[in-house]
Length: 514
Image 1 (cartoon, rainbow, N blue to C red):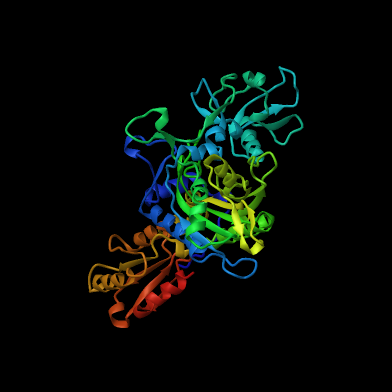
Image 2: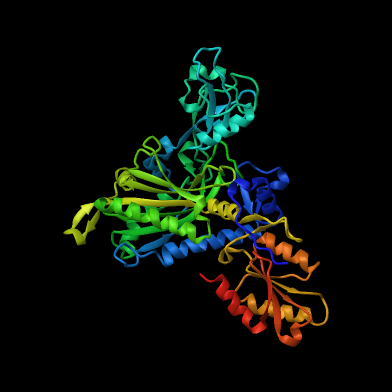
């Protein structure tokens, strides 16, 4: 039976089902699971690693190997970098991370849990009298007051919006009122401490001794490694402003409350590019990269209805930032709201100026195209999380299929990003079918990631491939030896048709394509 699947809105997808599929099919595992795990850390299994690498390679190709055309129709100049995870700790002083990379946090003396103050919201009564206050709060992300209100409405069985009740961020509540707040994991008021700063950088020590003189940090972002190498690239690669430096790599942030699967974790991978340009041209480049980054996310096969831009409000901007916009995605755990996916920031000349002042090394650029004008370049930074891209792809692709006889769920991944491109099956293990299937597999594996599977019924093999996101399966049956053709099954429709053996490779090339 042919079954055409349709796109499922994120609000109708269950994160527990997605997480369970990821574990069962080898996409993502809890780190150190046999020892009970460790909060905020995840391991990527065979299929998760393949999916992550496919996304990574596509970003690298689109950014470094074949960057977009600029406003003048000419290819942009962007080079790659792989900087060290541990840098001289002075770099983090200059960047402001040592002194200012902090999040306000509160502790609950009752539940012993810790929360970020800016992720908590209070349900408050309009009456300001002591007896009229009703407090309770719930975890949430920035720009999610509406989502918090929805959850609080359900939790406390009140109707919001209401003329008598409103939702307020915890950071807007004076500390002398904290004794009236009921925490999210307790029924008792007054268990929350006042917010205090919490540095997000992981500390380590370099060398055999472990004194403060040997202290270093695991990088909280890949961007600073690019800024530290700006002069090296400028002097060795024959680049000229405007140009970009791109990097993919691990970063580490000691998040107060890692949550929502791999959305917010303590170890993650970033895909960042710093675009160096003349100060007067920065606003135009900001708009250029804003649009280019949205195009790239759409190239992954994401429904445009699930993506949007959100400009940062003035109070959200970093002190050095001129302007910033987030590309946001409608995750199942934020729906009908959106959550952060990528930031595009106009960083001005802050970073290079800071490193120039702290290191004593000149970061000026001599612009021969502008009568040898000297300036510290401005920077436009598109910064996204590779691991966050993985969760977006998994959430977007997850599709329940209760009407099918085999798998009741599948991953409707765009074929080029699927971990396994094709499943190769003999219908039964006799009558020469395994030999033909093996030969086909050996031919295809030279160009495509394929899987040969001869175990269990053909229905169960199709179901396994559907859950893994494999777009096509090729089955050798009793007629193959005679007609030299195989049965092709499409993952999305379950439709089957015959295809000549010598056309399978061409078929895959066309269907996977660019």
